[in-house]
Amino acid sequence: MFDFDLGKLLIFGIVALAVIPPKDLPRVMRTVGQTLGKMRRMAAEFQGQFMDAMKEVELEGVKQELESVKRELSAIEQTAKVNAAFDPAMAMRQEMTSAVEGPKNIGVSEVALSEAGAMQEGASGAEAASSVGPTLPAGPTLPAAHDEEPTVRGAAE
Image (cartoon, rainbow, N blue to C red):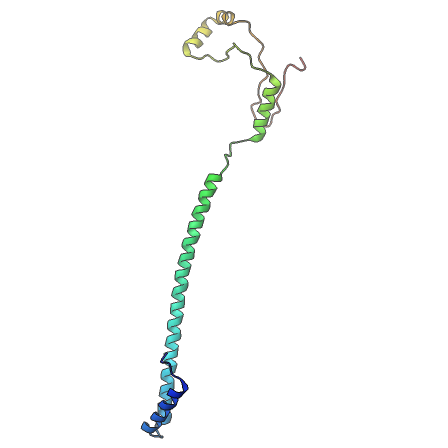
């Protein structure tokens, strides 16, 4: 702190012996020792407080870094979320059913495209059926629930 080496301490001790009388020397040395002890404790306390402040600053930086990592991970999680409504088993079941059914009937509409068409069909169902062409038997139906197995018509009939 004051950069004392052995030579400077020796000169300081000789001057102290010359200036301080021998009977007061123990009391002065005790006072100097107590003062040096207080100074060392104060320096250690200051150093401890400084280190605590540095740790707090470091922890704040780590907390901010963790929060940014959490935000990044949540953003990645949002982009990587898979649509939960996608059911590959159901998609495969529908594909197999449509492959077994064969091509769809062309020219037969099961749903009226407009209200006027629906009224006309209801009023003159026989006329509408004869104007469209021959009616074909209905194809196989898809199961309503996921657990049911699809039924295929035509093979046993």
